[in-house]
Structures are given as structure tokens and as C-alpha cells.
Image (cartoon, rainbow, N blue to C red; front, side):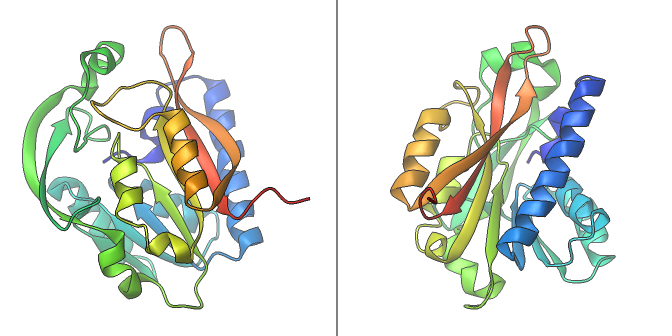
Length: 238
């Protein structure tokens, strides 16, 4: 599944400056909230965890990546760092098995079908294979990932499968402090949750949207196609 910076690298120098600002703000947020556990759903080869470690964040990282060839690279990277565990599983709203489409660029692989529109925007998103992968709900293993005293941040970058991850974490979200997820402005993966639904769903679960960053722009029009949304538990503070 996609790493957050995988599609960001397609764009301009300004985009790279935006990335640097995003990374700085992310670390500041984690430290401000006192986050001790970072759940990295859709870890690809470990880019997010590596970024966190390079920026000096030393909390526990739990990275989930279902594609075997990507997981192998993730596992090697995680093993080289302290308090970083890698899981060869997809995360969703069921426990069992699912089929993931493998994109040519790997970072855009998904448990949902890529639409013709999405492939027309960026050809390397086209699927060249598929593979059966284990599927798990966060609710099923959350107690293995965090203790009652932990402050947990959940990052979801699952290429259209964000709704499923959230629904499979209905109980876990009661113990999660903040959530960051990449969400499309309009449907790019068949049946995916788009921006308005994401905000409504997270609000219904007791979270408030506090920040949004452009995550992927259309290569030609430069219009935003995906946003990174940041939510925290609670309501707007006075």
C-alpha cells in the first residue's frame, strides 16, 4: 500500500518544500500530544517509520504492509531500529483474507479497484497483478499494540480502504488520540470514502478535523486530488 511520500515525489520543488513543512508539523504534533505509539497502516517499504526516526521521534512504531515484496523491505528496515515492529497484514473491517491489486509503482496498490480516471491521471497506478493477503481488524489486535497508558496516533494510507480501516477500529478508536488519513476529493478507487464522508464519519466517532494538507495534485491541472486530514479526539477548543 502507498507510502505517504510516494506520490508526493512526483511534483515540483515547491512540493518538496511543502513536504518539509509537513514533516516538521507532524513531529511537532506528535510531541505536543505526547504520542507514544504510532500505528502505520499502509506502510509500503517503511518510508513513514524511517522519516520519524530520522526526525528523532523515538516512540513505538507498528507498521502494517500486506504486499510480500514490500513487507520484506519494511521488515529489514524495522529490524534495524529499536521499538519498531512490522506486520505482514492488511487492515480493514473483517478478519480473514482479501485480494489486493498490485500497481506498477507498488505504492498505489489497493484492496479496491483503481478507476479508469485514476489510471488516466497516472499510468503507473495500473494493476499488473493481484495477490491474496491476510486481513485483520485493529479491534482484534489493539491490545497487542498498545497499553492503557499509551497515547496512540493512527496513520491510514490505504488507497481507498480508509473507511474499512476505521469501521474495523470502532472500539480501538476509543483509545486512539489522533488520526491522520489520506482521502480523495472525488472517487479514484471504486467505492472509496471521499472527503465529506471522511469528515462526517470521524466526527461521529468523537474526533475533530484540525488540519489538512494537499497530498497529491493532478500532474496537469495541479488541482488537489488527495488531502491528508488530521483529526484529534474531542471538539474544538475555546
